[in-house]
Length: 69
Image 1 (cartoon, rainbow, N blue to C red):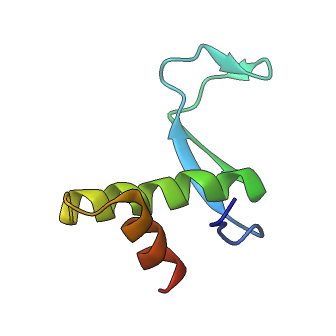
Image 2: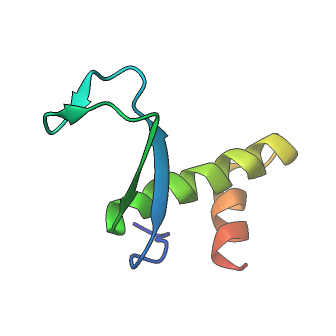
């Protein structure tokens, strides 16, 4: 990949309302995860925000903005 986010201590939260249980435990309202796989949703969120603010930007322009920031 051209763009990667920090892969240490990345936190993400998600709702478990739709799931009955996780690992056999009762379902929680929210849960959090940590690890390198959590960097992908964060970068995707940045892309979504840039696309909303600059709808005319091409994928290459968004990539350039992220890589030069």
